[in-house]
Image (cartoon, rainbow, N blue to C red; front, side):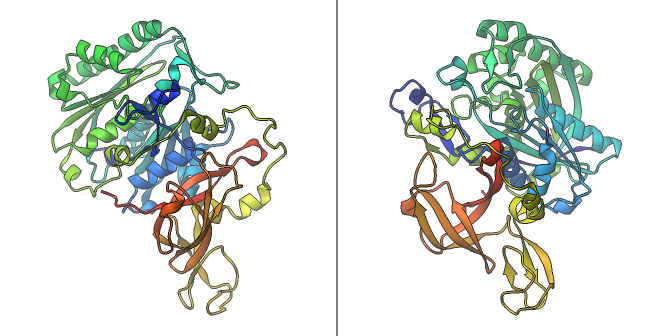
Length: 471
């Protein structure tokens, strides 16, 4: 029986207090939203969520990757292939992107489930990630948040099996963004809720109940996409949901994470699911889609994941609104960003194993690990006798560091380190910490990030972050 075998999430640790948007002082414990920082986007968050999903699992068994996003930076370049490379998956993996609708996340999940049930794939990684922007000062700005969720879909030891799904399509101009737009647009709020969100979400859940011969009381948790808390409550009441059945929509803590929003709520529900619990997830966008699952005995056997609760507990507030604007490159500057073709595509292709997958090499003669790759072992001088060594999932330690106050960043200084990983030494930036906390020997792990925007396009590499427990 096809189902979800593992899950993972990623929520940026940076939080923007909603009071800061209006220029008021941040209030501890007040409403906030998660925001991707200056080196994060839909791709980097997707890789982080996928890494959390695949912890302790054999990546060589994955034969498919589906990436869902409405904010992927490229218009013509597949995101799933980039993510597969960053995860060091096999070249024979099938990759596909889902976009164009806020229900792309559940659509991707359903496509993976169908592929596994049909036998065309065995283990499919589904990642939904969004980093949408609203115009500064607009009503939407307080609602949108950033995040990603990942699921491994398989028939082997699923923690939750699929019971069924239902979808409805609807043409309505409510929330949209054209190819030329930087910011998300929305029609009048009451119209969006009354003509779009409420009837579509109610219809899709009711339709799924009818298909399954089920009723509201059969479900332990129901995960509902929502543009705001009041609208969420309206649908919950219309469906007859009890408070304990409704998965917390995390409004005021996470924000509306686009096509990743409903998947994130499903990941949160799986964290506390017990065998036999029935779960329902419903997303909205140009109609709606709903999926129902039943938790199996394997849900208690899955090793702890870095799920939604882990990430929500790991937070720090941005001290002011200007810093957020700088991180999103929304400030008016004297000079436009540099034009031109950017980095050499030839060099990028030649070095993609090192840059995108953080692949080093291990000497077969003496066992020394080194990075970047070279023909002669720097320890025993053996020549052309190496095997690949993936470093992205290992723990390193800071050997030495410096603070760069000139490299552009919203929160200087930029921390640059030499970090040792199993003997290999890597020149790498350290993020998600303050200068006063850095010290030699500090344990770090690695996070896929945007390194710069040379040539007007995102260029990716890895950065170090303080190592944390996975509980």
